[in-house]
Image (cartoon, rainbow, N blue to C red; front, side, top):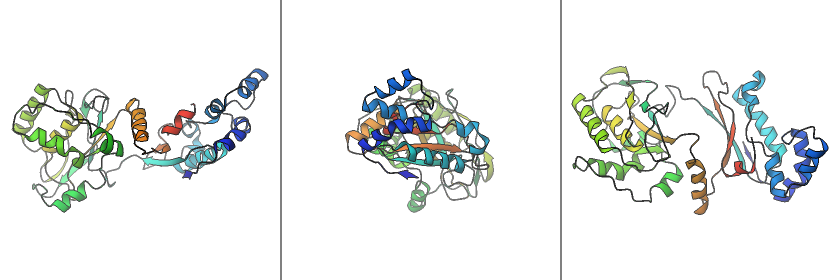
Length: 311
């Protein structure tokens, strides 16, 4: 749900009452704490009463359902009288039948290098890959449909694509250069072009070419892939080479790159977008398990407005 911004002055008038009512500054204040709150600057008061995390959605069984948690957060956001827009969003864990299940998620570090799911270089695809025919997808419309929901973020498209990164095409066949140029049309998520360790890339490429496709007619689990030493973009190129055939839904294996949750790149994205007039949205993200509707992580406020609050 979206909460529309009100005037900054209105937020300040409500700040003391809100702090006491909601307990963000302490529902029971001693004189020293009250004097401290009253003596704050306007900006400090807003920071004091803006809540950024809702751990009660994990700790309280009645609030552990995604919808109940969302209702609580919406109620508290309304009571905060914030001076900026906030959107609450429920993100469910992926299931085999969700529309983006054909995307392999590739975590990357601040330098755009693949780090794997557990930061040890290992990548995993969660589901079986089922193939009707061992024939590559060639129809442009079908390829476009496969990539429809797997798009680069606004930051990737408008900011990260501009710096010129030149990586040595180590095998001199031109395919790596061509891949980097079309990455924005092929890969989803937040990322930038980065250069792999050359020897690692050549070794992995030779191994994959010698092995051939790892999927065949029928259903199979994809093996883990060690991406250590590869950029996220190049890791995507190689896993797609390993899985060249579309699944039974007619979709290719696609890639979705994302920076680690604690990466400072996220704050840099907000600053970069604001500089070019693309104001990023402030959101409260509720992560929940699809099968049970249970909240599985502390809901957090993310975005430029979150810098005005505290945990």
